[in-house]
Amino acid sequence: MQTALILQNIQKLIALTEEEKSFFLSLLKYKKIKKRQYLLQADDICRYEYFVLSGCLRSYYVDEKGQEHVVQFAVEDWWIGDMRSFFTQTPAWLNIDALEETEVLMLGKEAINELYQKVPAFERYFRIRIQNAFVAEQQRLAQSYSKTAEKRYLDFRERYPQFEQRLPQVQIASYLGITPEFLSALRAKLAGKR
Image (cartoon, rainbow, N blue to C red; front, side, top):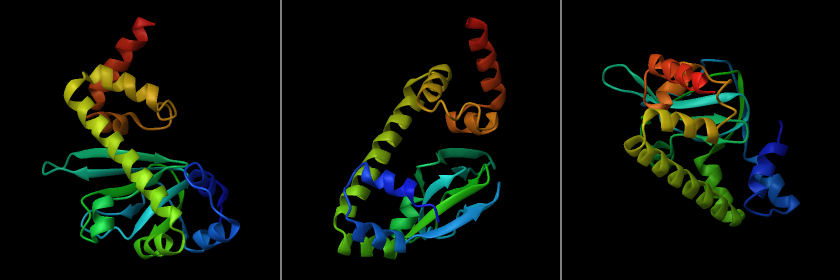
């Protein structure tokens, strides 16, 4: 199991002893999933938080018209899950599937609670992670109401340059709340300005 990446991620926010690192690593489960395979389907209970070692995942929901709406992408060194379902152990509203062949480390709710008790520094780690996710989600919501599609796309490209060539246009459009055709026209317009 590849563990260096997750330990680097954690050590950006908290310091751990070798014993604490070993204990944490003992709680993780490894999973490899194929492109288009689900980690979570809506109405199932989210039993894990997922840390991406390699590949790319997306979380999304499907509206009453059958339209998919991408909520989040997760690539190497990112966490993903349905936090509401995970913390309340109620049915998920999100689907999480792989856009590429992906490897993840999984951390269950009971494991997190055990970490909080035995390594209190993890409460700080997960609190900061959740705060950062909340701030990012508020910013995204505000942008969706206050910025044009062009400005949202430019902000997306600037903030996530690694996604432009890696993700299908239809996925980026869904994340931005626009149609793939509109995104294609927008890209052509912006290419013409160069």
